[in-house]
Length: 178
Image (tube, rainbow, N blue to C red; front, side):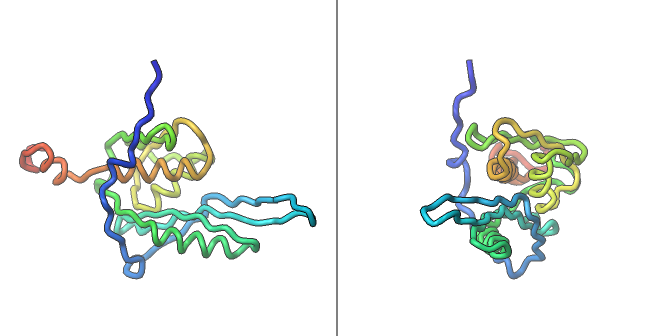
């Protein structure tokens, strides 16, 4: 019996927009793609870039995609799109000790452990995790390997983390008893 599709979009709370001017954002290019379209007059060449930005001190991360005909413009467009898509992440001081699964359309997981960023997927997840300031985490990606899905799944998994006060409130007990 296979896993059914899960809809994680309904679990997301309404997010208050975060002002990027007050943050010390660092951007990182995750993927660059050159797209060639064959048309009647020849070939149209364009570029797209997937950008992850974040402030490790504020535990804020976002991603954006920029597309343009020339090389430098997709980076600027991606950074602007990422600034509009900032999310706050609840993590512990040192290690994220949780396991979060995204749905089958955006497969991914976040687990505790040492940082390992060797393969392309690990670099993509590592960009998101480093941008939000998690120093010590082991990640595992299940399913498709394209950079957009890996980045989206990592952000969905990190968004689903809750702080101790929110968990205590849900359970109806004091924070000290957790």
